[in-house]
Image (cartoon, rainbow, N blue to C red; front, side, top):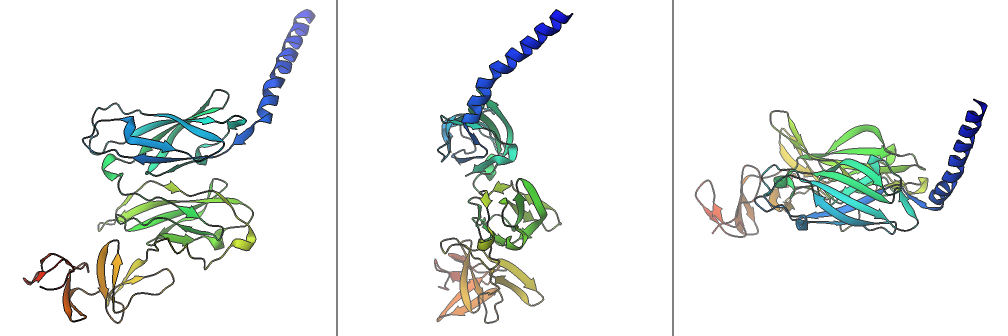
Length: 322
């Protein structure tokens, strides 16, 4: 019995000794604790399922994109099909993967992470993602950014009535989900300097019956924020399109910019449609006289072009009466 115990003791001692080189090798490598992939999709309804219609890129010195494949058991893309994509990432020499689900960022298309696993001594990362239904892929939120000031902003989407925004600290949600009708939100008052933060945004479509349709969450960059950079009055760079929000009272509708101002006695282009606002800032419907010409705005306020007005008048390509 004593001999058996001595043999077991020697065995485990040897096993521990043999594991030292592996532990030492891993310690010598640098850890990859977050990854980001950028996906471009040319998928269309009625088109043959083909990996060539999807490209995957990653800008990192620590890892590179390997092969990707579509896992759907289909020959032709049909409406409402949700593409499932497997992507393999390879760590460069001297690196290994060590991350959680929340550390994977997907850019370029609306998608969510389904599974993640490491292979080959953590030098290979295999992720599986679920993309939005084929007919929805064209309209999505992208380019979500979090600045050191605490300001978050993203590309506006015409197909939504508003957005839900969440703040994360070290992967944990902070406070309540915010609802806004513009494409920015300042979290400066909610951020404590000295922590790593990111935000997530999704589009919302509110219906008349009170229900709502929601898009997929799109994540921003992760950022370590210092106290001297927080600014509750910060605005995005000048090349970023700032989306206002519609407001309404008993007198009508108006369009409010994030700084509280609103257009008056002028035309404004909002998501490619033109609206006219009177001297008090309210949206105008019906006929508008402007610089010796007449224009017609429908019940929704949108300028009519190249068509007949409800009262039988013709308006041309610029919207003026013919």
